[in-house]
Image (cartoon, rainbow, N blue to C red):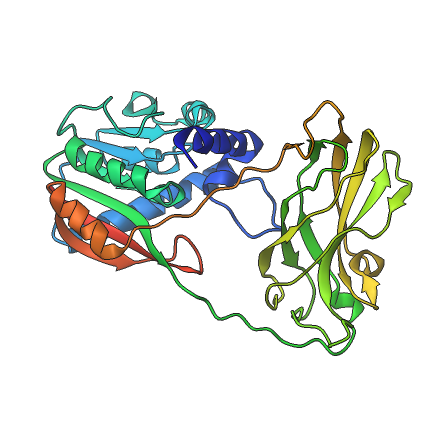
Length: 367
């Protein structure tokens, strides 16, 4: 994904829910952050980071700080509570506009749109402290390497740079329990998150990635009996515009691994749109084969309004949710890059910012 595509994705996420895009929570919880709570998480994070920097043996001057990948300013404003000036930089114009609206520190915080693979808008040695977290991990290494070099250019001699970046993918053992009995009705509860609307060509395949959360009382086993009985899958129906059933069975996808109560997973499914132009309802639900659709046990289906438009090219689909990629650089390569950029590595801490499946580190360095 190039920077233009990355920018488009973050603008779309910001338009949907900027705070949630910056700091997500479990599927099924309210998607509206309380602003005070949201910004308090930034205050706590920056206080913890500055304490860790001191322990590592670095004490920056508290004149000017840079928050790279600032989003709506959660950490920029927190830095503004410690530094005389805090500058936030982001690739998304929608995020920057929202950050300026939410800014509570006036001229003490400034926000800058940066659409390039460098920080040429800032002169050498301008900052005392540079901070970046859950940002570099979403861009290809050709870009993150360049930005890391820029961090050490724009920080003054003796200044401190702290950034987080995944290292390498790691395999995660997931349970695959065999399902041999029907789920109790109280276990057949799911929260399913799907796009609100799509537009596609007639008969197009919709390559969806659907977030599903187990809202039930017990684990959903991933494996079925040899004859397919009791398999738990994500499936879909097609309804006409006003609700009449058009196609009851379409696509089905099995669970990649067991899903415990309260846990979420992303499941791929590829429904095939109707061939006749018009507006339809794509209905998504979980099903335990030969037992029941979860909706029959009181679970809520997810619905997507799909406009089938013959003006689109064959197979074309519009409105798919943006996908944010995950990338990393091996730790030894990052440490070598810090040194080559004029930095001294003070500490490297493990963290879990990317979630399961990746090693990840927070680098603390001084120029």
